[in-house]
Image (cartoon, rainbow, N blue to C red; front, side, top):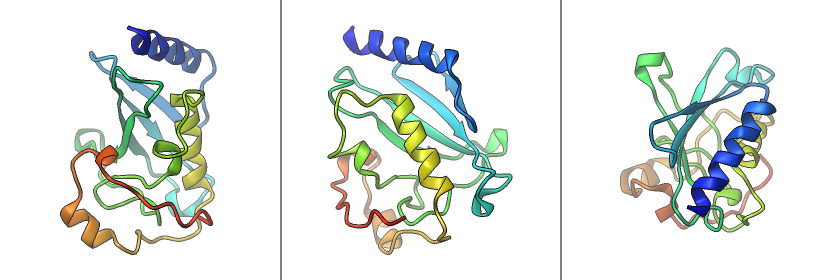
Length: 153
């Protein structure tokens, strides 16, 4: 119940104060939501829209949501952003979604981080271990123990 109340409060806040380039898409399940992100200020992602899926548990905000980029073919979202910390399967290597998470963080802070992550990127490449990770990765990105060794992107 506490997780549900926190999510509802955060969603109300996102309704009041929208974020440039970010739109929230609700589902029938309060614990699953989507957001679209566009970053027109970066030529690598100009005219592209990307979709992020949040899967939130009852332990929220004490544990971070599972968060990954997904495709939505019906809406024309057919690609995962190419970024040195985003794998082909949409998994995101971002410490905020793992070891740096604290209950003070929010859905908003994740969205701002992802938008900034894309806006500041200058390299059109996947992580060095992308093909190996893609073949053996778990379905849930939270089941991966990422090593956060490069914060220069």
